[in-house]
Image 1 (cartoon, rainbow, N blue to C red):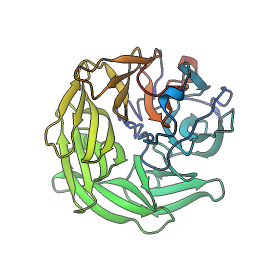
Image 2: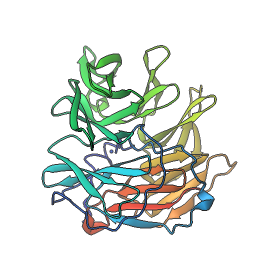
Image 3: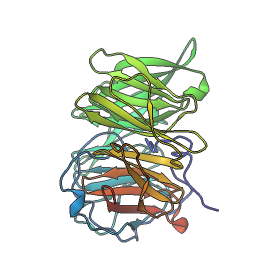
Length: 366
């Protein structure tokens, strides 16, 4: 029986999931024996699994055959920054922070912890993460090692985004109506956490957070009940931007000249791909019966997603979009999709015996 890491991403759809995904694994350096290739050139910072919108090199320059290039035990939280890949894997100590640079052929473990590391954000070689058990926001870098940046009571394990000198996290709280989500800004150099705004999410089933991503208008996150929240930088308010009764399965933010678009998959029997356009109040359906799983990514007018029989893409600008196969792989356990402007990368969060590892293919429509 396939052991997939649903305690982070399938049901919790983050793997910041779109969203966050692992099972039991063993060994302090799980999966380090896999062969690896170059991660290519990438962007910096940003929310986990948001990928890069950099256009360094075009998809036409890529001639990769889709393949798994790292054999790994239950990887999740795949993030790319400045051409280097970072992710989390389960280890005998709890969790291992894994790294693969452009010049490396084998991944390395740079940090092991008993908790935390579920959601990652990377900027300029520094990795940022939260630890809900310790109520802290932390960072790690090769020169400085691990640092505690701030204490944030109730901070969520799976959500963090970094922009410049600020890290953004969401914490759980409660009020007279049930539960709240409170967003904080934490200086990346360390210091007191600044509360920015909060929103009531009702009862316990709304308390789960599915990823946190930055856009041009503010910081977005979703709840287990299908609400999309926005912290608006201009007003300083937190608003419910969208409410989907059957839930948001996985999602991504696309910044446009007119504002942010939010692309998402609904939790229906045959998941559908939808978009909330900038300034719109109602979403529009783009593609029905996507058979999607737990990963969705948007880049340059193309939507990528995983489903049971592979990784697919469609032209979001087409009048009648068609699903095109990017990679005929086992998509059940794919929990992360990111890009570097030339290649699409994914994490298969199954255990090593069932094909866990990292894969890549050319970016763009086949």
